[in-house]
Length: 473
Image (cartoon, rainbow, N blue to C red; front, side, top):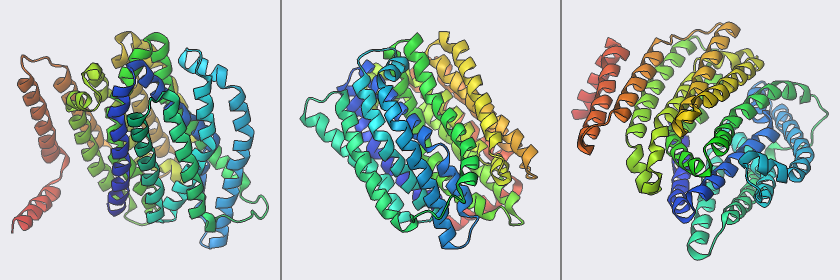
């Protein structure tokens, strides 16, 4: 909880700076142009994950295999060399393919310059990612906060100032992002300089590549999902729908604030305690309380989506609110699934996650293609089904790979109750706005009552009541 609070504060501040530019971008640019900006930001993330190709996960897993600092340095340095070799090989190829890549991705011509700015960001985005992960795994919290919060703050301030003082174009946004990634990428490597040494041979390359490659494929496939939904929307529904979907997606992913904070803390914590006798009990407590928080967050976000969108983006994006529930629910289900699927990480059988992720991506594609006649709402529910499939498959494979079984009845019941309450609260059309909000408040209260009566044990209820009495005293 302490690390979740720390990293959660960092993520919240970072997202706050992003939110400051969000209303400005949506009001400054047309719906179509904002959709293009969002699509190319997603492409930047996809290309960065492609060149990292799982090495961040490999370093995290093998860093704790050694107790001596020199061996840890060799693991880090050899992984860094692998990533640099990949960058040198990939960037010239991506640069030459910019024309065809931009046309294929958006279905529009004349965006090759924008695509080249995206490609130019990738090496520095890799450095930012490398330094952030290393600072996190070595518990260098202050430096981690400087990179994670500082990079978002500087880019937000620069974009804000440029849009207010100059006649900016789409390329202006990506020039700002490039300069920002350049500065913080170099600063991050400076912070990590004590961990980087000249590699002594290639002793760790085989294990890093074999373990990381599976996760590289997993991360690339997972990063393809935000690119796939935008690809289908631009091809079948048009770039204006792309802008509407992008705004709803941004609101839904406010849920990523607590999720990312938890995930940042969960990684080191879960791997550090798995040998303890009460590890399973701890995992189950974390699973239950995290599921409660996420499900309440999904409902709150879905019910507040429309006024949030009008406030942050303007009333012309109000139709975007329809995609918030399925996208937030899918994101929440995936986050909950990290806990019972930890057996895959503990067994080191990372290829199992690859098979689960690949199958989930195919389900996502099929679901989106089947539901796209419903518009952007159909695309959002297709993405949600893909997230759910990934969670189910990973959990099942984890149970087969490692002798760790967590009881799943509580998170399953919570997700089912959230789905029912969310659909009722957002789809029922009542006569007045006040009646709609009263219905949504009722759904939230019912979920809280469900948690109190069904999810909590008698012991937990007694402890909470005792805690409340102590607070009053």
